[in-house]
Length: 176
Image (cartoon, rainbow, N blue to C red; front, side):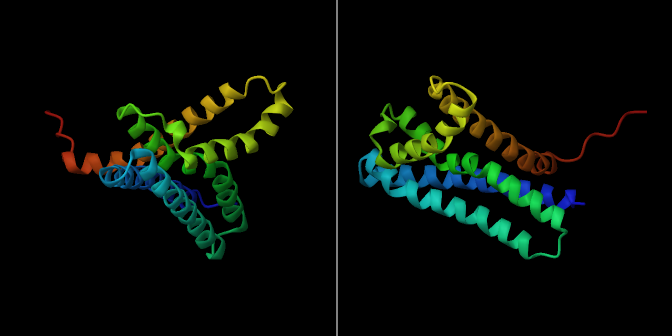
């Protein structure tokens, strides 16, 4: 069997990591953009942000593997980490894309963004080619971007919502 509570806690930490990675990468790129060109700042910040994000995910998996949890819990946690690594890596890249969009700059000039896109395409293209003829890779890339953003947003919202409810105070008692 597996511990749903432990897995839920790890998924919550995943959501917090996604949000932190997005915000910290965005803050780093914006700060770097004050001193350098936006694309140069992106190329300086993204590798560090992606590496730190993967490190955080890896630490969570290692902590679970070394814990006293059941083998099923450890296995489910490892499988979820493998499934969620690409959406998690997308968080700092999404921050760079959003900043470039609002700055009216082309993110494609970033070497790190290009390397990330090529790396993901080299991973996903063989999978997509097995399913289809390989002619629709652009739509697979767009699907990946959308899915990664939605997964991160939902995960973040599920972690932030209880905090917001506590900040807003208790529900009013029904009049009776």
